[in-house]
Length: 186
Image (cartoon, rainbow, N blue to C red; front, side, top):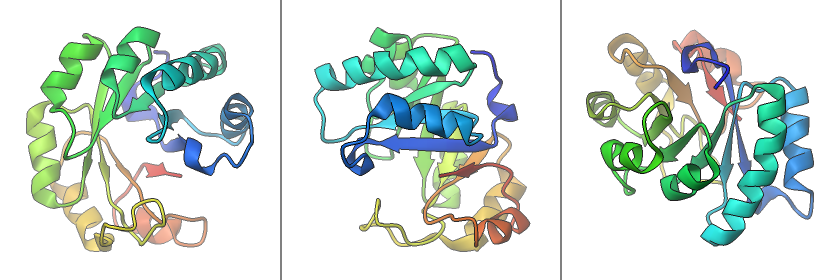
């Protein structure tokens, strides 16, 4: 990895559900050209074999540009392709289990939706956390927005890097930043 997680500010999720026929490698390149510091591949509807092939292709772009690459929910795939890390949700593997699968020197991030979950993820040894959804988002229709109050709480009480996610757009990003966020997910 050429960057420290602390230095990453704009985290992009390349969700295969939203490719609409576009090439994932081209989209990853466009994300990098647009200024992202970190890319996560999210491919919930694809098999491990498909995700492995896709991840290998995307890694050629991210590595050539020095952009860390994370795989969502599949630390076993992250290990096989030698990605820079894995991201797990509240109902997925623990941080420790994910770290055992991907090996030392790799990042493990965890999604959080409350202050307690954020504090727990920090205690578990997560390298970073996702906090959200801050606002309503079609990618997480079953989750109620956590709001800016949680961003303020996490900002004042959690010491590891956190990325705010969920419904964040150019228009409302200043509010999220004013609440204490230093890192955003798009």
